[in-house]
Length: 190
Length: 186
Image 1 (spheres, rainbow over the protein chains, first blue to last red):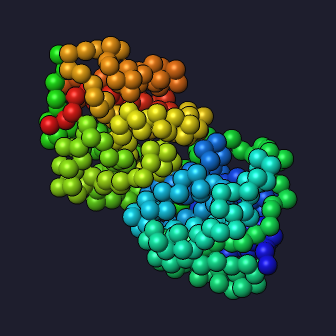
Image 2 (cartoon, chains in turn cyan, green):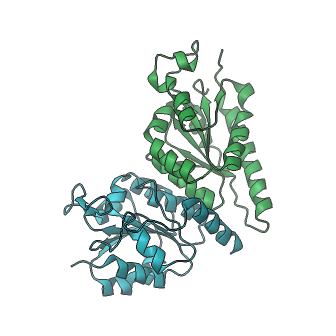
Image 3 (cartoon, rainbow over the protein chains, first blue to last red):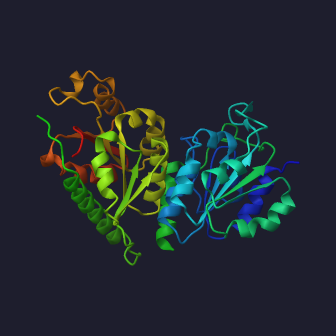
């Protein structure tokens, strides 16, 4: 069983509260439409960096939840980040990992180890406080409030189908430098 | 001739750099909370600066986060910057080469201020960088020039003023800036 990524993103948007959200790659176009706010910053242009960007935010703003919307292909580019995150130990860090088994943006080539990779085990082995997986939307919805408040860092592997759009089929959005200044202004005002 | 710089001098300069950065942030954001520490060093261990990294273990007001890669260090620096925290990178030249795409994406295209202290492992005391037998030493400045990254050489204690200067420069231009640590620190 798999979930539609857009349904998962809508559930996260409804539950996130004041959390900062860091989407990347195929979650980015949908997230732009679902949560056009605000406290989000897209990781585009340095693939694999979303969780590190989120870690920096979580360390700088320990009072606020930071939610990373990562992908399996993305994190494989910087898998060592799991150890760095676990070592830093941000209590306010929720790492959602959308696992569709392919590099959707570049033409849906299979990721290395597709079908064998277990990010729950990888995260636990790296030292995350906890790690879960979901392939059922309703079960995910029920658990979601807890995933956004429990002590981190936690990893949540989300077994999904491919998104409707990718950054290649739906380019655009606010340029990264503008997102930075907008987010800084919002954080300063709160 | 270049000279080795003692770790205590570098650490005192880092304290001053972070104090100045905190003061600037406080002026920009009056009423904001002031943490107990001064700032962050994101390190991927560097043989050349190992005496500084060792001495930093006894400096609680400066937080050191060891990263698995320099790519991570650049992206974490972006998050810290956006969240309002002073930080800098301590890496070696090989790490610069390894993380060029992230440097481009985050610091150049993303316009994130990132200041890095880059150790020049294998730099010969009696040779200019451009004449080094080590390609890792020889290509650092041309690479930084190609990407338009301002840089300066730390060739001895009299050059320590370049650390706060290039840190400020990275903030002012909203991009990368670097100093090159010429000889292994003592």
